[in-house]
Image 1 (cartoon, helix red, strand yellow):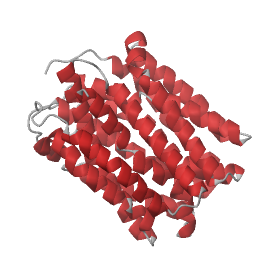
Image 2 (image 1 turned 90 degrees about the vertical axis):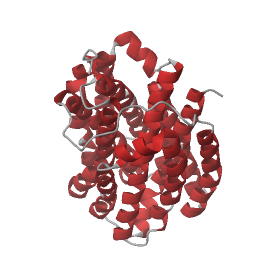
Image 3 (image 1 turned 30 degrees about the horizontal axis):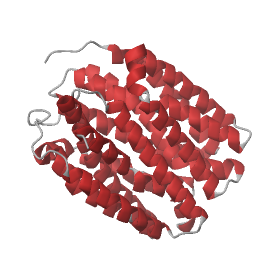
Image 4 (image 1 turned 135 degrees about the vertical axis):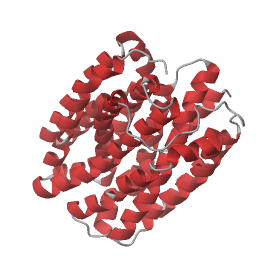
Length: 377
């Protein structure tokens, strides 16, 4: 098995447990008797964990290396994923989500550095495909979570079953990685504001990442509140969204070569905008699910093409740029649910998801920055 194949499977395995958590969010909300504002407050633990991790994660990943980061933080991540399912109160749920987000931040940064190294070593672009595998893993996890919920399997039992399958596989793939891959960059320096070009790229990705996070956390609740859907149908909406993201990402590298990153980014953002409108005004379950599919297509390749643009942007070094983009994107992914929850508390779930429209419009507006020519440092 090639290095790139191992990397693709690691991307697939990483989000499976997180995906299984998503269909359980309405169940956790009910168990803890949380209103939308209370749930949003609990979900705010995610951005807090991410922002704290931002202070040190790039240096930690550089010190450990991509291989060792994988071997250390896959077990940490799977262990922490059980905590939100066991949290008995809102504060402990928020704390557990902060720890979960911190472990995700470090692990996903390591995986992105690993994918970049694999591209350089094997002279083949796989960034979009790698994130397509990530989306397939998320889809598989949400499907498993929805099936387990439909069969009334306890959340912690389902999480344990997924861990017993996915973690040994991830560790096997991780141990087969090269032990001394060339470093991706020099030692990161102190924290500094990103270059304006890099900041624009990050803002482009922020809008789509916020959209992806919002759909991940609130689509099942949307289906329940808007149509009275069962947990299984709610999980189906998330799975349909993830499948749309995955399939589009699988074609992303070829689409980028054919149309260019800016044109591709803008066109897909418009598709996502159409999907948001359909979700907000959907008259039926099937229309709502179709809307989530269109939103998934619209948000699909923004992060992979954003990573490629960040590599070429001015900054301290490549790894620092990618780390900055990764954390801003992940912050958007985690802030989205909080923002949706606040608006939902005031105006309902449809209005809450309507906030995704200006986010995707921002991405469409900033897409031309993706065509910036390569800059020699």
